[in-house]
Length: 61
Image (cartoon, rainbow, N blue to C red; front, side, top):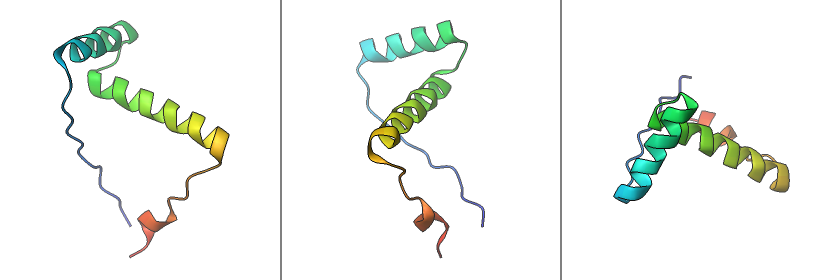
């Protein structure tokens, strides 16, 4: 079964938005790519501390 990507809209302060784009450009990523990079790293750290998050329910019908 194919799982479709999800869209996430967030409100962000202009200064934070500017800084995000600045860092993303510096790192050679889009702002979206930078957010995904940060989320993956955050989740990885969380799972190292608390154990893997079970995602099997994503694949159940």
